[in-house]
View 1: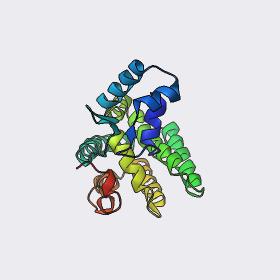
View 2: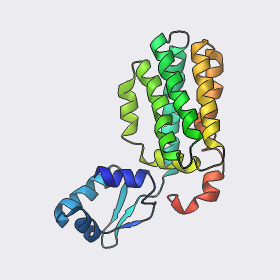
View 3: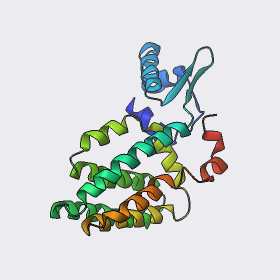
View 4: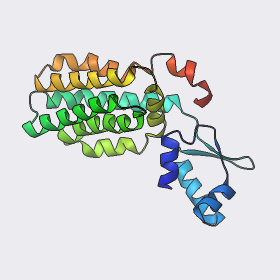
Length: 210
């Protein structure tokens, strides 16, 4: 099941792709019953939509779900960053700087958007964990299938990775230098700029849930 999840999240299986029980049964050398159970579980987690008598398809990206996750993360991360501002341990400073350095190295490589996405998550997860809110980060990840694919597609934009890395650098600077008054505007732009633009609708309308 994890392999199918990864293929969906990485867009190897694109939204709207038909998923054949027979093909999965042959591929994983399993009978149809466990395959149906796997698909049912994937449906419950929003990876797959099951249509009786029609078949199974990779779920389309639900922008309403994306917006809800952005709203939740925005509310939580503003408070998390303000709580860390001026209070970050030396170990925490080194951890954030290490992730930022890896992001910068990643940008110089070709076809590294998947790796950068992981490092993007690593940066934000580090903020949650450093603030003692790791449980909340893990909770959000359970409902992240639409948001992850949405972010991955946005990262195909030219210079997008550089923009994200620079904003991460500013976040770290504001926390370390205790400039909490600048956090709200930066984080609002960082999380909401893409959902407020028309880029996604114009370039990936075939992937969006109607």
